[in-house]
Length: 172
Image 1 (cartoon, rainbow, N blue to C red):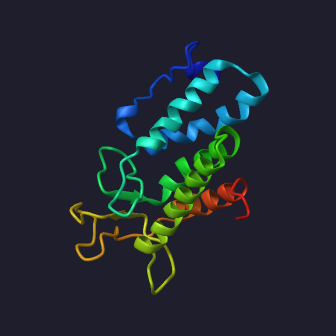
Image 2: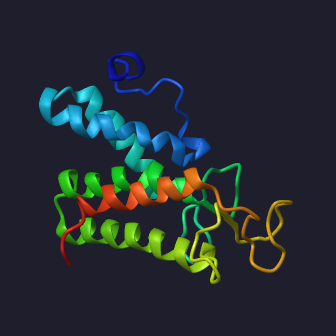
């Protein structure tokens, strides 16, 4: 994967920062594994590119990451899986300033808190797959902004995101 999609300058083929697509962050997990072993600058450059997206990702009014630029005001369960393990491991291994790393850790936890706040069904305890802050999407409940359905794969992504993130978050 890395040899095919990361060129010698660290440019990621098929990636556009302007898309602000959380799905594209997931590929960074393999780079976080490879760079310490290879020390190839192209992998570090690609890691920094993906982190720059996390630094500029559009957010809802209370700080939740939009799933993609083309999905404004929307948080999706799978966005946690696609971005937060990378962001947490990045903060742990690549951010030298402890205060800056802590800000990332706090933001990661906030993403989970906001999904719980906005997407949790009180009756079942399950999480709706998506939430639209604007309540304008045709799939969004006009009162809550939630999608109409629970999606088992989305619940799985949520669970795996939490497991992966907990491996890297400091105890505090």
